[in-house]
Image (cartoon, rainbow, N blue to C red; front, side, top):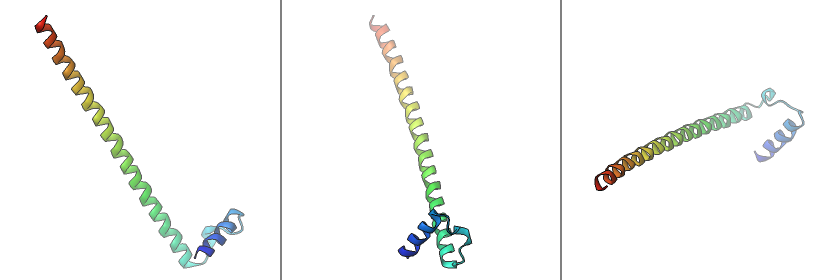
Length: 82
């Protein structure tokens, strides 16, 4: 199997054969299977990255809200003591 992939890679690299003109059903189904796996991994990665960005954004908003509240409370405390 590894030899077949190496031969295919060399032939495809030098444009000897086209991947979609191969008549080996097992090889074509293997390529389609791996393409589906790659697409699923890419979609999962995109979902994870989006979730991470949303969580970081919410964390920044929460921290800025806490900072604003603490600043307001400190200003009130300093006015009362002055």
